[in-house]
Length: 251
Image (cartoon, rainbow, N blue to C red; front, side, top):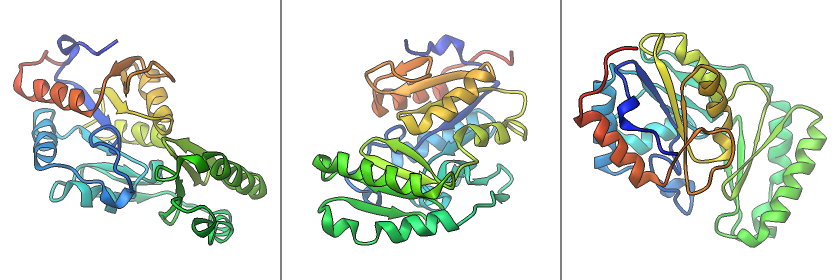
């Protein structure tokens, strides 16, 4: 079910995924961009809710900033490995690089053997995209599972929409939400996490456990999100209502 506008209070804190949520998924990561209207909407939302708006993405923070330039919101990148607080402080988890370096070597040349498959090397994580070659899904997933198995606990496989991501165990979108919620201006608020994919499940779980609201963007009720919103356009309409209508006082 969709989340009713009548539930919204002044004490909400917003955590939102980027690709497939605030913006449509592009054919390749480099082609993703936010419209000026989307950037302006986020700026207004951030002002309306006292700065308690954060972007939580698999992209690095530098990539998030590029998409939403010149707006720089609190953000968690690389599924929680790195985080920028509302005060602009940059926090980065300690990551063991041996397993990801070995994965990088194992994937060297895979794009030649699987035309259309794209390797997105983010440094601490690596995403294998097959959006342009969906017929290679099985081959990509098989190779990713082999790499994780060889890593013997040093890597996790995070499947997403037309991609397989290899990441070190540890921080995730849920832990990023928890870290934000321990800081001003998020502390003491009711969290809402909005995402579209299995890569957002950690965020959904986190806000559910905190008594907040979880919203999945899409047409199907799958996973742990309690609410459903059809697409990015419906999300934008919802956020527009939030910044233009009065909302309840603190709960």
